Image (cartoon, rainbow, N blue to C red; front, side):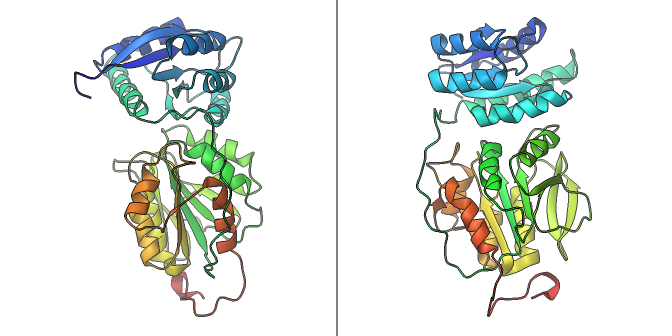
Length: 356
């Protein structure tokens, strides 16, 4: 950010004075950021959001009088802002509430530091500042747009697996998609959702409550099964090889988990029987993997701009011709369901390991 730009105005919300002091001090160290207010209750956060109109709000979740999800819902209704949840990863109750907060309108999650001094705390502060600066570039969305669902494409395809890449705004989008898929879906779904390490187990439990599909963290060398949704282990990339076997590798940097690695592995393993999609998110991860599935003859889609929280990853996927056009979020469950429908599939190439 150039020096002539106005600083990013941040409201810090935390019921712990010690934590609020630490967050405020770390953010203030960054010349791009100005802390314009602090709140120690949910109701006070709503009031200050309305009065101060901050660019970004850092939000604790377990607070007196009005908890995080309720405060976020009120803020998004009365004074929409970009909200970054700052939560204790070790607290299981917090993990559940985190994803309720995302459904209410929070954009991202970041874990609270586990240390109180030294270089580790400064490193966490730099991560927090970078997250705030990235959030400041995201358009503020006060409500979800309702878009009519077009009929799914009549491709005649028979997909044997679906892979999805998502980032900012992804968990609520995944919730909407997975909640509308049948429990007897005849294929597995594998997902690369960018998320701070420590939050994957909470996301899996939360999504398990909204879909009839079985949602789990994949294990190394596990054979994928139909009717199940798989996420990689925290801090790992996931690929699918051979006869639908999971491979997990520690991430080497970049977006984690990698959507490109996942989708490219599906193109390589399943060919024309691979399906892939790119949902809302910043950056361009997943776009090149989607191109690989498209080139292999598989089914591809990208979420459209109107229903994306951030039209970054889907936009690049469309620009690179990984799919023909963007589709509204509400259309995606039918695209998956119809593409996976079982029936005669004449003149279709063999699947992995030559299985027709």
